[in-house]
Image (cartoon, rainbow, N blue to C red; front, side, top):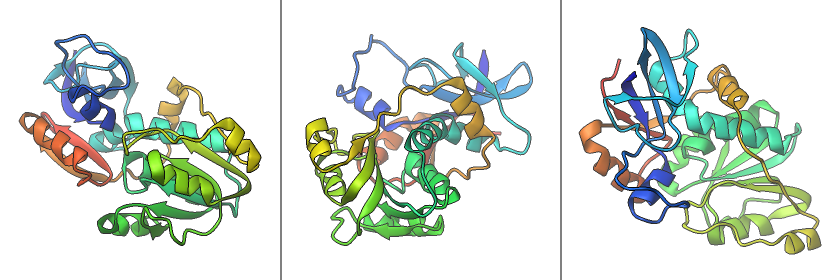
Length: 259
């Protein structure tokens, strides 16, 4: 059993709790797919196969040792989002000088995608709500709002929003551009067909499934996760409400025992 210090919260968990999740669940269930804490005296993080993380102890799952020099809360913040960001940037094969547009750039995955794209030598613009622009610019990217009135032509779009915002980002892609959709913060996936993309010479890139290697690389990447909010375990409902209200930045963690 893992003695839980921190539990990861994802947007999908808020959807599941509200009855709008992308897959069916068997009730009763304890939310939480990722935790960090101690197992036999070792600092570890673990993916829990979908549930069980909002607890003082968690069992099973895929366990990773936390590298020396990485804080335990940062490791939890990298567990799901770092894995996803690493997978997406691998699939995108970013080239130096490309113009990259990241939607939901102030979120958990978005802040990490921003760092990885900048490392690859891209010119990065991050779309976020106006009050979150400071988060985007603090990472070294240019901030824009979701109207995308002046984003310029993009070579590559990372879409964590979907809906009409994704549509506007697609229309701002240059011929030969690429788009990776991985989230639906708007409540709907990007409604862009392969035929429509092909007519504009745009490639819709599918990233595939993450592997253990993606998580291990994220934990050793030197990425700086943005932990915007921390809530006590008994405040999990308030944490979900904040995420659903789009009032959060970066990663939101539940502090169970802390360090």
